[in-house]
Length: 88
Picture 1 (cartoon, helix red, strand yellow):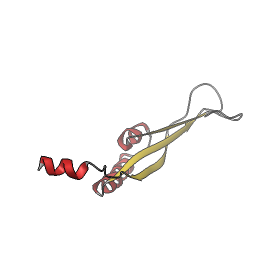
Picture 2: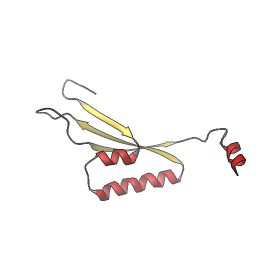
Picture 3: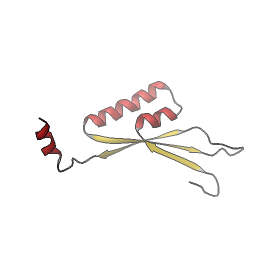
Picture 4: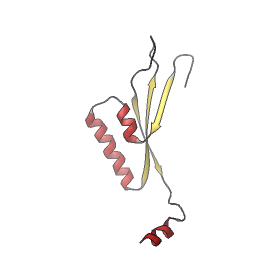
């Protein structure tokens, strides 16, 4: 994203991949992934989101800043129960 003031990059993706590009203590990354696993165990899908801004002076961008987790309901496909029965 580019405005008159600064350029900004945003990334979204698998939470572990987004956590890996962000600079924060390993313990914080473990806490985030624990939360992601908690959501996933309830059948919810998660995406990680991070942002970084272009440096005010010089070239290049600053470090990635973790913005959070997007949690979504991943609805069961209509054919899923039949497939499960066939595989059982």
